[in-house]
Length: 463
Image (cartoon, rainbow, N blue to C red):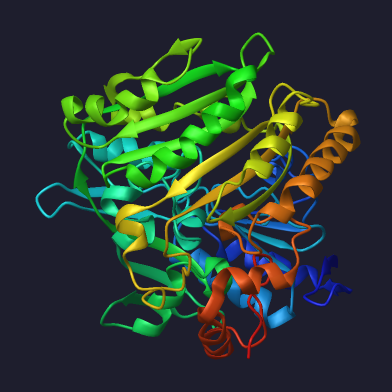
């Protein structure tokens, strides 16, 4: 017998023969505690997540995924789906349940003539970028390179190309998904259009996507980099940034951060990217690069793939301990700026950061009801990110970030980019984030996952 956690949190004993049959039927194998490879497989990007699932199904194709979903549904087991393992709350794992691990599914095929790519569910963005950049192509990815393609896409997909080319979901042409009944469905605008609508921003609520097909765009040399300022200019920099963002053309991306320098000194930074002719980007960003008295101007032409890893250290580092909070805001008030600058002066860890990502352009011109992703208006995604190396210090750094959040949250909206959800965000915040689309999502959840098998996520309950 193997003791496994159920959907309602109870523990049941699943027969050794049943577990053995699942293990035999999986091409990728099944890991139990104590098996070789289990310790590495249970770890996720956030080192502060330390959970021990009873079973980890290493899936190598849709048939493995179908068997695993059927096993979880038949026995009523707690199920987590892991792609890149990059969610801050650790949605890709659980304690005592079953993890469906897509990470072995790495196939990528690029059709440079049609400008499309087919990508399996375990691919990371750095892997997709490498494959598409070989043809001078790309699609909107994230802001660090080790994010999983699956998780980022299903939550909407903010990234360096979103102003010009829309969100990741706006470039999704089709998907292959295993739903809670174990069926493998091909979905697109013509086939299962309701499910296709839900997958584009509805998170992991509707099934396990085994493959994505994306539209690609010509992207090679881009402009990118940071302009870094001392903290005593941070308030002025953030006020400039607030007023600068609405002037940007679709080709330009401007983010802002309070963080620490490699020497451990708190600084402010403008993070800039231009997706068009370099000479045009130089003109657009001239005001930002001429503002104030920067410590360094690191903006320069670079390959697209280089800009995609610009924020990787420390944000993409696997195993750092993390806690973060996030919210959208349509305004950056003077009071918010004042609170953030005060917080940056007292970072509890030199790896932590306070970051604004600006959502604008093509991604905001899609009607709110066209996809499940509802945040279709110009605004900022604000993230307070706590990161540290020593797990024994977790309580200190979490307390610091919660204190900061208590001071800034009154100046933010009550909605969030689903991919930046925190473990202690309320269900009300999830509902607010889907806005008017929440009712339709609940109705579709009742159709495709009536028992809420896929619940370890920013959950939408069945209507």
